[in-house]
Length: 343
Figure 1 (cartoon, rainbow, N blue to C red):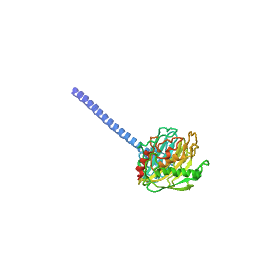
Figure 2: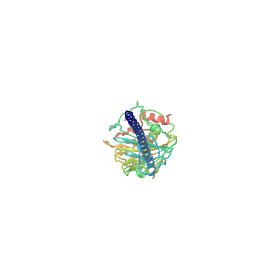
Figure 3: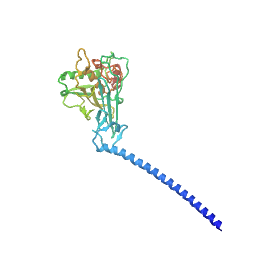
Figure 4: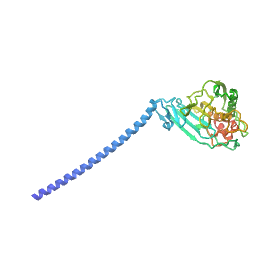
């Protein structure tokens, strides 16, 4: 009897220990699962509000929007039209729905910068780049009539209507005559409209037309703000002016196209620096031809981008002391043909 009670007691204690161990394991597993689920929920709760808060901030704040925040497209849940988008030292305003804005310029030595912002039915996206181009020589380079290089800006956006444009006469420096500047600008656009090329090729664009409508008091909206170069708001004035540009930039163009693919507006600024001249002096050094720079900028206005071939007008760095870019190269011409056809 005593031995039986002892055996029973030992067995009972063993069973209790076993049951206790099983219970502890079960509680531990449940606790671990609960903590894991809680952690996942916590991380989800922390992630989503951050994204939602970022989008919400765009709607409640008037601060400039970093271009990186719009990479890939963003539906902020509110209209961003007119808001400033910044990439480095460049900024543009978000255009109306269905419109894209881009900005490009040409420099005398260094980097050329660009920024593109689109509003596609409330989804706003951006793209930007800063591509250095090989420095152009300080004298005229032989035209490469074998070159087939051209770039259609953002896939190609030709004008489908006559390009009407004006010069802001009040912006012309006192050292230049307004009529002389207007004459150089008209000749610059004519290089594209009438296919004035360096290679003896004949023909004219089939679908490119322009009309110079004289002087205007309307500013381009291009200027400096807090150290950044900005485009103005979307407009249809197509104005050229002369004013301050930062660094080594000689020209800057902002241009807009619609969802139908056609270019619809542009503004161009040429530098007011004394380095930009109407006529190159004898013994020229560190001077750039205004008409050559304008020809390049009008290339952007009609839908062309930068190329790496330094003999082409659309090269991103302007050569000093030469008028060669007043006429277009073979690659430039092929880009013109791709956009407008050549008869």
